Image 1 (cartoon, rainbow, N blue to C red):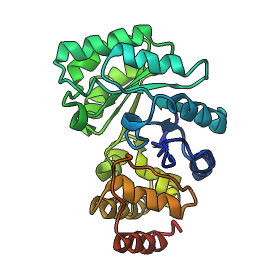
Image 2: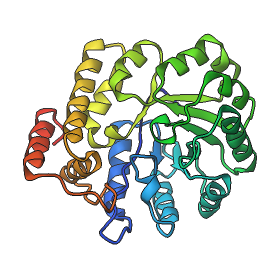
Image 3: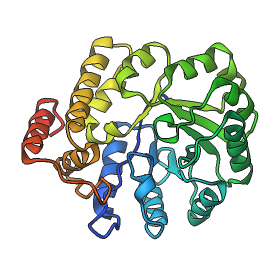
Image 4: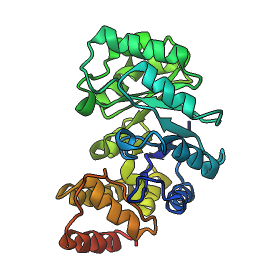
Length: 291
């Protein structure tokens, strides 16, 4: 896993919930062309929790075919039990991917021992390397340093994606990353990417990269140039904050449409954004050179 940006792909579907293949393919090619060092298919930005069981393996196979081993591909398998996650893994067939990404179960809150047991058992039973997705805003079960001390002893646990910058810094301070040089820590809090980069954390993963290929590329073209990093990151944050004024993923759908990657990226119950917000998104994307 090289330093740089890792987009969490959006998943464009039609009104029936089926993948819009041409749009999805263009998005992936756009990310590879922008310099992405790897991609996550069907993370939280990719509607993992709302994708139909019928369409799940279709999306995974399409991402595998388009990425075509050019960069690492991870696929989300998040669900509420080990057996359900293993069903998802089985449905992937024999595609050769970097690994699968799983949160803790998000229906019940787990205690620390249960979190360790969940990932330990999953890693033993998974045919793919497992990446931990620390998403306490959804799961209510944050990943801690004490848990990682145990989990990093499992060779099939390959990394973590977290928005907790202190957790990654603690891994470094305690030499845990040195002890497992095959363990990858991805940082995923967009608001502090510039701080993370200055702190030596240079593998960053976020869904906003997919709708801002120009600015995402600029951030990582020259990580030593603080001015370029800050300007480009600020452009991405402006767009993200505009999305937050209504429904984030519905607004994201419109931004992807402007990039010629149409489809519904929001849940099937989400309401469309207003015409006023569409105008604001278009004007801002022109201003920051995305369209």
